[in-house]
Length: 228
Image (cartoon, rainbow, N blue to C red; front, side):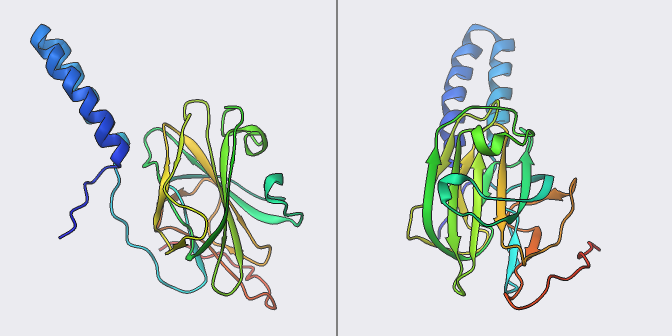
C-alpha cells in the first residue's frame, strides 16, 4: 500500500534538520529545546500537503493554488511564450499561511516549461508578472485548448521547485511542485472562457472551480456561478 505523508518532501527534510538542532538545544536549555520543537512543527505546517478531491466535470478549470484571488484582468501572457493575443488572467496570491503545493488547473499535456530568472518584487504588484523570477507552464488539452499558468516568486519566496517535465501528461489537480514562503500563481485562459470566481474570493488548490472553457463557437455566459 502506498502511504503518503501529509507534507511535502522538502518539508520533511527541513523539519528533520530543525528537529536535530532542537534535540541538541534541548540538552543545553529546556526553553531553547521548546523553541526548536515549535519551529519543527511550524515547518511541517508550512509544508503541509493535504489530499484534495478534484472535480471531474469536462471543460472546467480549477485553482492551481490555495490563496485569494488578487485580480482578474485581460492581458497578454509573458512575452517568453510568444503569444500575442489577449487572454483572461486570474492572479492568485498565496500568503505564508496557505498550502504552497501547486496543482495543475486542467488535464492535458505539458508542451513547454519556461524558467525566467528575475527580481523579487512584492507579488501583489502588477509588475511582478513581468519582472519577478517565474516559471511559465504551457499546457494543451485533448481538444487543443491551450492553458498557461505561471508560478511567480516574491519578496520572501525565493525558490520555485518543479516536479513536472515537458511532454508529461497531467490530470486535473495533480501536484506540479511548490513555491516557498508566500508567492503568486497567474492563470491565462482563452478569451471565450467563463470566469466563475471573483476578486477577493478564497480558493482551494485542486478543488475550487475558477472557470469553464467555452466552445470556440459559443459565447461566454454572462452570469457567474455562485457558491451555495
